[in-house]
Image 1 (tube, rainbow, N blue to C red):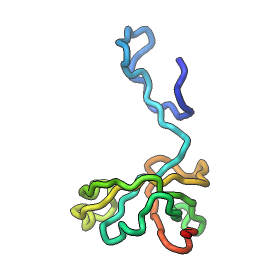
Image 2 (image 1 turned 90 degrees about the vertical axis):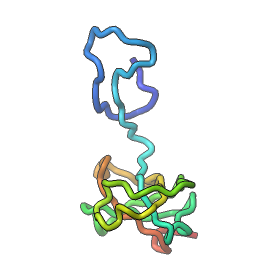
Image 3 (image 1 turned 135 degrees about the horizontal axis):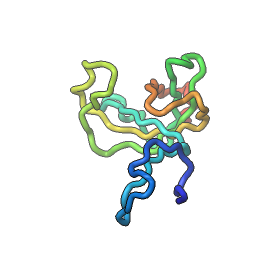
Image 4 (image 1 turned 180 degrees about the vertical axis):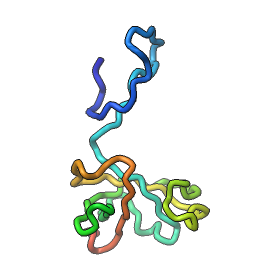
Length: 126
């Protein structure tokens, strides 16, 4: 069995010797490239979130050494802030989902890790 992309094996859905149906899930693989971040922006800052825009990404473990990213997708539809957002006050706000491709990711940037996204001149916006 060959995976269609490089990744990390997360789960095995069936045991060896199990009879499978066509199209059934055998493994869950987490893709390792490209590395991207899901972020949310409120309507007040939506004009800054344009595809192609460069941003800085800060983690708690590297507050002085940001990662660099580029916005690849901005949702056309508003949604309520996901419950995983850290501050309860923000959870009832309408936001737009972003997908940011990290251009200099390393092994210290892990899946599920919270990041802070910074727009602005420091991010190399032209």
